[in-house]
Length: 152
Ligand SMILES: [Zn+2]
Image (cartoon, rainbow, N blue to C red; front, top):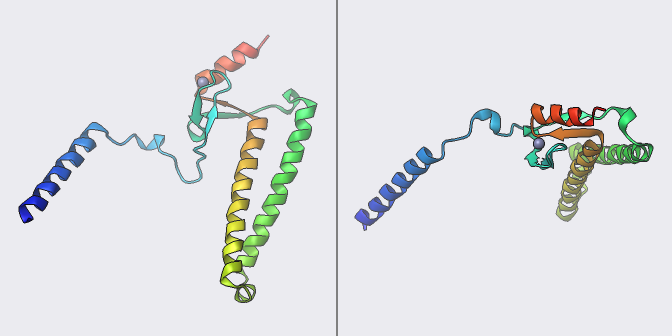
């Protein structure tokens, strides 16, 4: 029995060493840092989807955004603000110990589910807003090519 377990451990170690050797860790700059948005976004030049933190983002000059879109952007921004307010009041309620004591377990559970939902909404709306107000590129080359093509 011991020999069997020992063999298994040896095999596992050999596999681990093999994979470590075959698939070295990517360099640090390719790994997302805290707060990085890892949702993919399509490059505005070539259409390739890339994790947002790995690409280049550029704010679209306001003059280049159509009026209809500007309206949508303000509406979206107002929605983002409203959700932010809700998130803040949730956070305040969570810190209020006297208030927390009046809640049942069920209510606390509900509140934290709501909070998570709000965070998700906030993230999604923010992403939508970002997509409307910025261009996104794989790299600086695609950014330059994009502008070269747009120039008259
Ligand atoms: Zn690209």
